[in-house]
Image (cartoon, rainbow, N blue to C red; front, side, top):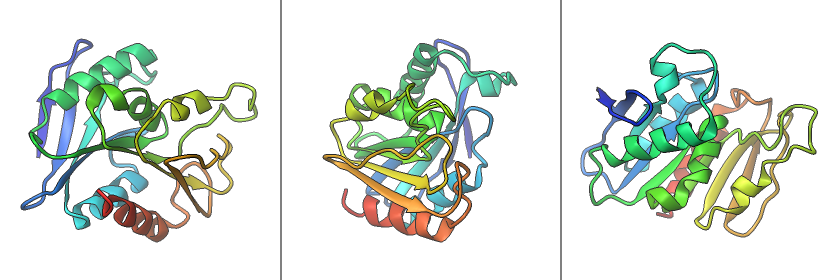
Length: 194
């Protein structure tokens, strides 16, 4: 089921994957160039459903409009917050997250959306080959539990574990397709704590 959502920066789309009698809502965003059909997002959605969560995969307005280049961070964050406010998840505890750039948006907006946890698939700690351009501050500002599933050979770096921050490493790179089974187990197990 797909719903169009109004945001300050154009329409977004929510791909809804509900379960009967959900105990939790999980909302995930996509990476810069990929959509909501990325293999890791699809597998994480199934794992979340198995953990009793209804899931929404959000397509940002720039993607819905067919643009290849990502919007600025402030626009992504504003569109994300607006989209989440329109989802049919009233009263359910909320976990937000996404893959790569979508994970960054979820981290930056965790407090504003009232998220109880943040699920990061392939968090891009820094641009490839540019460790001095760290985005660790985006992770550090999150005050709720964070799960990061990261490829062992990810050219975007390996985020450190920290208070309330768990890292699960899988074989492969930024695509996270090296071991989707381990990814799914990590997501299901972590969501069971909420």
